[in-house]
Image (cartoon, rainbow, N blue to C red):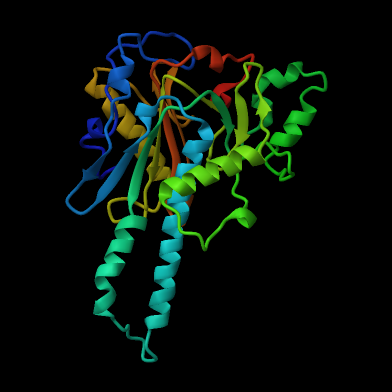
Amino acid sequence: MRAPYAHQPHRWLPCISNRLASTRRCTALPSRVTRHSLFSTQTKNIDTINHAAHVRSALSAGPLPYERGWAWQHVLLNRRLNYMRMQQQKLNQQLDDDGTTAHDDNNAEENTTIESVHNNDWILLFEHEPVYTLGRGASEDHLTFLNNESDGGVEKKRRLSRKYRGADASRLNIDQSKRHSSQIWSVEEEVHHLTNQSTAANTPVYAPNGSPIYRIERGGEVTYHGPGQLVMYPLLNLKNPAYKQDLHWYLRQIEEVIIQTLLEFDIQSNRDEINTGVWVGQNKIAAVGVSSSRWITTHGLAINVSPNLDHFDKDIITPCGI
């Protein structure tokens, strides 16, 4: 990202080491990278001259269910989208017949407060419990363990299908009928409610190692998240002048932040001409998959630091479809 991250990536990425330890296709950093150094990032604001992003870290809590990270994204996203809709409605209502806008100075302070609460850019930091996720267009064929199922994986593929929306779908979504728009909740309370709702409503497909599998709304193929992996969810408004309304540009900026950050620790990394993500030699060190709604981004990146690489075994999945 051109601002505020590219010039000071160490301000939002935790310490990682200067050597690689594995020769697998999906690689990780060596044991000298301590969990304390990796997961000690503090909550802070990231400032530029004209823009600020707020960082919220859940790393001190240790590995958390994937549903909770997903809920945090959607609560902050939906609050921001609702704020933007209300602001547009107010603007439309204030337009005079001659096309000018009426101003109410008495509400200026209140509106500023509302904006500071609901119209922020955020970067969320998580370490997740083991989970596999499929992007919105990902192929179930990359769940290679299904080939050993008695039915060839037909039933689980049905539940994971990109088009299937049945009650037993292994998919995270928001049940609009259970949302209580009239109830006043803090962000934390709404996250807790949505986490419980998604957990209760979904009986996921499970991999042989016991990890749940969900289809979600990001781009990309199947990937794994788990302990020892740093997951970051930037919720950025790409309409801001600091950015561009271009998801391809955004993906390249995320990759560049990772590359420049690894370089801070003498790790030479690069992009792949075909596949999204960041690589060290032939090994993929970071996966990238994003989504956006009205140019507000969700999902993001995952950096392998010290995960259990057995979860990437090709008898279970074809990581990132590669």
